[in-house]
Length: 257
Image 1 (cartoon, rainbow, N blue to C red):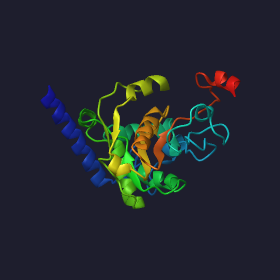
Image 2 (image 1 turned 30 degrees about the vertical axis):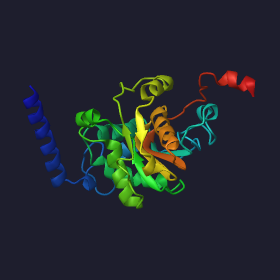
Image 3 (image 1 turned 45 degrees about the vertical axis):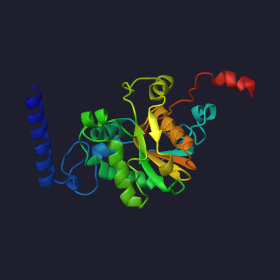
Image 4 (image 1 turned 135 degrees about the horizontal axis):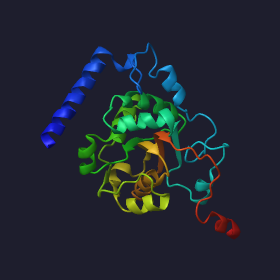
């Protein structure tokens, strides 16, 4: 059974390589794969992607109804100074992230280029790190998509990528569908940073998507505790804060101010 699974995976990967040799990514839509001439997305798929270029929280970078600090960041300031992202995590933006997570590594080329445009809005970092995975997680997915993005962003920006500066020491349960509190509980003490690698530096964290922000915040806190001067973050996509949702305990906080 495992052998046949490996054979089928090989066939799929081989077919994918042949397709991109005959019709390279520059001439096919990254999302649907139809032939195009110029650009990276066809007209329909481009229309399905919502670029995060409107009103956004100046701290977490997620799209908001107005350009102001969102309630979540007001209630609990993140451990990173600022975060930015390219797309809203829905429609075509969510599909691009899913493709990257599930074997379509070539999507990282364009995503890295787009992320560099957002990085230009941040103070220049001294070094880049990627949200790490355990060996078990990398084996299951075949690669760390965040590290793939980080290495390409490093080449495009000339900011050194430190692949071993942070590591994930324990596997965590599936995060999808969990609240921020539950995600933070999953991530508690699972990251570790090399103090000698990050001490005194401005560190840029690279990840594929920000939902609740728990993963980025947990890693940023770890890096800050290890002596980093400042921490920033960039993701390919982030969720939209469509309404002014009040974090748990926010109303009580207001009564204390």
